[in-house]
Image 1 (cartoon, rainbow, N blue to C red):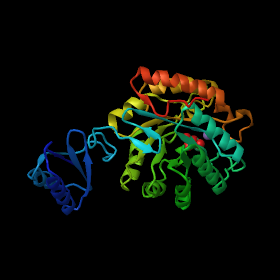
Image 2: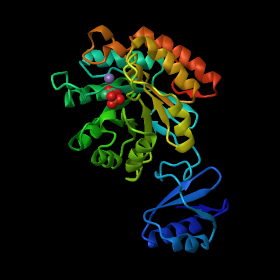
Image 3: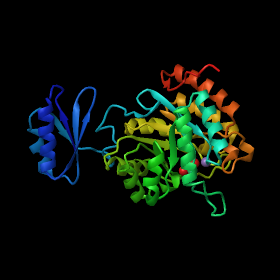
Image 4: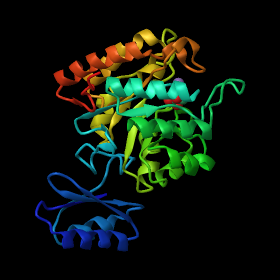
Length: 345
Ligand code: PEP
Ligand code: MN
């Protein structure tokens, strides 16, 4: 349930009510909105609890939270949340672009990609060092060596580093180098991993499982939020359907739906979502027009020689052209493409 405080409630009254919630054996999460503060009371509720809290000082109302996900719900936090890392921002009017290769392959590859995506206006660098591959015989990533190269690319460019963590054993290692921990589609319901990244002290990008429903997606997000980490982005990367003309089917309706149900920023991945380089820009424009808070795009210096996902990667010129148009689309829908000022060359 949520305890909605009156708009003029004092800090003492808010703390008093948070303590009252805790005394009932519930977790209290204080969320300051633009209009008023609410306290989310998470845990098993009993019928008498609502009445006893409703009579507290400075309380406007006590209401049940209808959604099965509590902390992710917009009922609890009506204002959109924003994830910020360095110059990267996504949510609450800011559109952040995360770009880079599918996998880190070499120093030269990641450095040149970092420079190119930065120059085109991206504010975060993607690159997998631990790669979830369908076949055990495919390239599995450079592991810690790849993480070191990503950190070096951040050093030079200032881009925030976004990289996947595949298992609980690797969370500490990846968190040492990364700015944002990515939980991949295949791991969306790996609950131990969700708890571990929730407690790792880094922002998280959670990708939707290819066969997960929206409720399952939001309940997976809830695991991360429940560890006290509210720096969380949701990434729609396409789902599996009967359709074969795209690698996955990318439902852009997820943007509107998620914005209605949750305050969390929504990032669209048109690379995995389509599986074809030529489709990526169109879906990126459509995503921004539909209100996406961010994009995650695969960019490679030489897509035809990439060790993974070259067929859906943009080259540098393609990315630059896409960004120029994304900027115009963002402007048209009153969104701000963060880092959109391209340095003069
Ligand atoms: C990725 O972003 O590199 C990736 C593996 O994506 P997904 O988990 O969405 O398949
Ligand atoms: Mn990929």
